[in-house]
Amino acid sequence: MVGGGAREHCLAEKLVQDGAELFTVMKNMNPGLARLSKEVLQISETEVPAIVDWARKMRIGMAVIGPEAPLEKGIVDALASAGIPSVGPTRSCARLETSKSFTRGLLEKYKITGNPEFRVFTSPDGLREFIAELGDYVVKDEGLAGGKGVRLSGEHLATIDEGAEFAASCIKKSGAVVVEEKFIGEEFSLQCLTDGKTVVGSPLAQDHKRAFEGDVGPNTGGMGSYSDSNHLLPFLGQEDYDAAMEITGKVCAALEKECGQPYRGVMYGGFIATKNGVKLVEYNARFGDPETMNIIPLLESSLLDMFSAVMNGNLKESMARYSKRATVCKYVVPIGYGVKSEAGHPLQVDEKAIAGTGSRLFYAAVDRRPEGIFTGTSRALGIVGIGASIHEAEEKAEKALRHVKGHVFMRHDIGTDRAIQRKIARMEKLRMA
Image 1 (cartoon, rainbow, N blue to C red):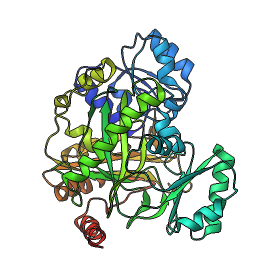
Image 2 (image 1 turned 135 degrees about the horizontal axis):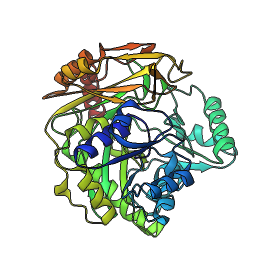
Image 3 (image 1 turned 30 degrees about the horizontal axis):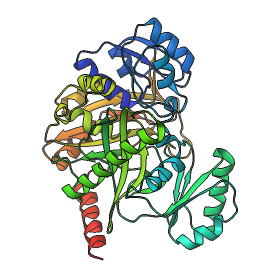
């Protein structure tokens, strides 16, 4: 397992349950992952040569790549050259996430629905004019930015000048920027596994990027998420799920044509339901964080078997069986997260009491030291309530959160009846317009 966050803790717990022997590479000492692991290599997940040497030495039979940064560094290609197969795409295929312009261009070239009006800029020339032409717009950093490289007009950017200045800073940093039409609607996440031919979906989830309650404040990597017992979301129908699956299937086929090799691993689509149907916000080349914690605890079949099938090219839809339960995930994060985190503070976690609420605990960017658990600069841990309804799951998560103390905060509104009713009403109004 490459990665030391809550996503990796969640995946690892299920893989060990399915019979895997775990070896973990992580820069922080995640206590949940450490307990599950036979061996830990504590280095940066992007130190690819050292990871490959260690994996060869440990005689690893399967690598699971958690975060996106190692994919951009070509870890899957390097491991393959050492005879170690991975659940994760090659560097070329991983451009689905690591290059915003690649994905927009892919949909355009292969005439796949879901694209906005967009332009890729490598210099500031024409930026202001295109932004003015769009009206409502989005600026996306071409490269990886940890979930913080996207800014929207009317939310983060108040004027054309602000948009052009941010876009110019992206060009300076990454060499290019994507400026595109702003979609209006409700976003949702569809995480799929594919062996390059068959694409297998999972229950939908909705992430909450903004730091504070009411969906305000700076963008983050995600403050929490929820899923519904029918595997859709309260404001979506089966036709929305099917539309997102159709786009993903076409993108998977297009990737093989474009890259000359099958895409094997996770295709996690961020979609948005609009009055004009389902549109694509972006793709990620790995599982979502936090959305992994919504779907993997519901998986009744073997994740290990599914991963093996991804590598061997014999994935089948029947391999994925999910319980009809709802989940609510809420992240505990250091004070200042989203702007400048105040890290290095002790964290008190009563694991037994959390388990007693029927909730699940997944450690993230914390560090276990002899004197206890300490926060880092990113999210500390995820609490997942599971119930027959979103309401029941949310109540369980809230009970569990009482047993975490420290220099931290969290969003209490994720998955609440009031927040969800607001989303339902918004989509009803949009679709009637």
